[in-house]
Image 1 (cartoon, one colour):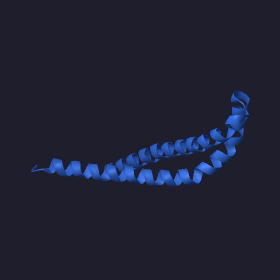
Image 2 (tube, helix red, strand yellow):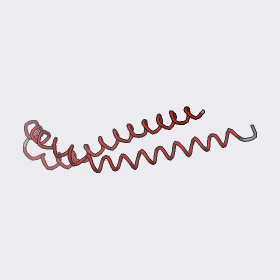
Image 3 (tube, helix red, strand yellow):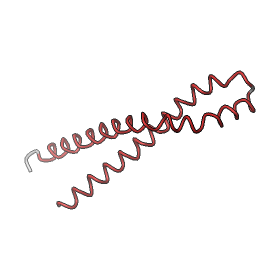
Image 4 (tube, rainbow, N blue to C red):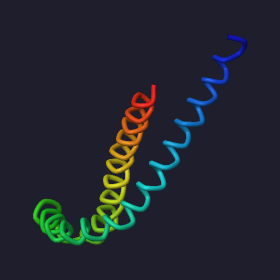
Length: 98
């Protein structure tokens, strides 16, 4: 009625920024806990492949880069999954009460 659209937009903006912040925070936790096991299980294969394909001088550089690739993959996959789950969960709860 009188300015309700602005209040609704503000509520949606607050909800979405909270979802984004929560998804980012949870993704950092998942990446912190998930990166060492993923890196540890895959680094031998990556270094063997690097030595076979590019020679013996690149293993240290590739190991460093592979750690950050694993961390980035886990972080962004977790953020996308958690963000989607939170949005759909919030919508499911909102539609149940309407």
